[in-house]
Image 1 (spheres, helix red, strand yellow):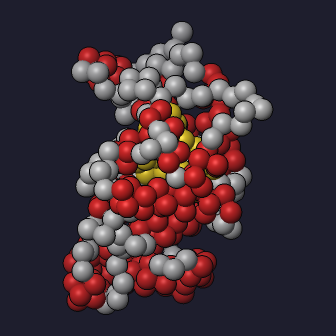
Image 2 (tube, rainbow, N blue to C red):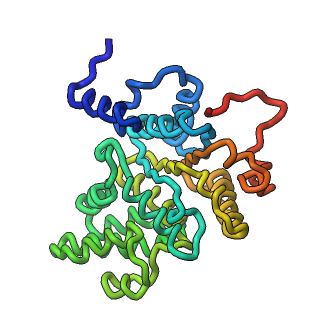
Length: 306
């Protein structure tokens, strides 16, 4: 018999009463999903070993997609991985010129979690774990690989600013550096005024910022980063054809990058309804390059997440 701590049992039951997925203790509820769980465990094993992963979870409403993503998060924590998660919405998209992609990034980072911070909001403790244990010269050596990314130099400068602020007890600079890494600056002028950095995380570079965050998790002693983006069906609902296409082009860019780049320990999980995937007029299959990558191989029989 499995024993559940009273506090954890109470939390699980409260969530179930209102029909939401518990944020912890998911493994106690997992029944009849052995194939899906095995696939998740294999993905996370590869992440631990330095291999990237990409997977799309497809299922109707109420079929258990969010449950599986929550279970994946719990397993990832057990395997020493960090997790960022967010739901797409009209104001949170993969492509935007109005700040919506930056808003998605900010939500992903707000939800950054690991085994020490399972509820999220883990960026500050993760960064300060690195900064407090090393001198500035040691940090320069640790951060040298960040420059392989287009935003790496800016992250490096912000992290060094953060370190100096910790030494000097400058709370304003500490908060400003953290605010920058969370994608909360909307103008370069304001960021430069506060911490003398000329660039900011924006709609155009938020994905590059996530890759830098992945590298930072490894410097902090974790085995990599898994990103969950749920409610992808919101892309299907974008009425403007070109805007929808731009978002699908971003999906394609992410797939290609995860599969082909020299980045390591970086995983992406997306989830949506069957229409989001297979609708040939508005779904992912409406974009031929995505259809060719995601369409089932007719010569194989595979299990689906549904």
